[in-house]
Length: 181
Image 1 (spheres, one colour):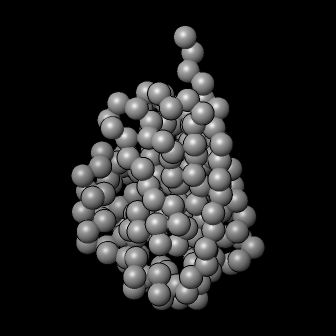
Image 2: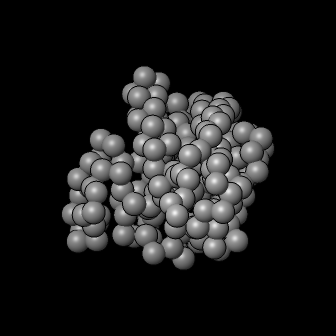
Image 3: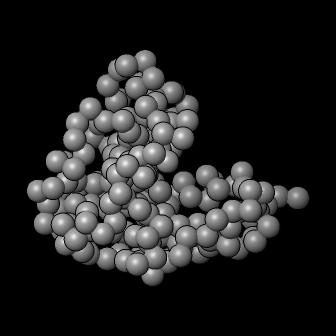
């Protein structure tokens, strides 16, 4: 029996002063510490550690536009393995939107990490010390710069992040990204 991968997607956004967002939602030591526990740490171009001061990257911007998506599967019994299939179309759409916003606002986008949307099945070039194959499209996540996404989603977007029981997709999936401008 095939699983039903039909979803309903709700979108959210919020704007906040950049200095306020940095002060209230960034705890670099804590969140980069979580990144260190991930198998992608130092193995993806969008993941830390970075060879530059991340705070300097964002300190000159005036505002941040936070974008979020709540992906609600119609089938409430989907196995956890279905997560990527559920999120990929939304991630692809939001990433294109982010890159357009980055360009139109003259800002710096922060997208999603994990499997690269652009390299397909090829491993990240960072693993072998090479530059990113798609630097015009790949962006780090807000988490990779030390931002608390759970708090960002809850306080700025009004969405509480749900977690899996380890076997099944949660009631809904949440994506959070943004553009400093």
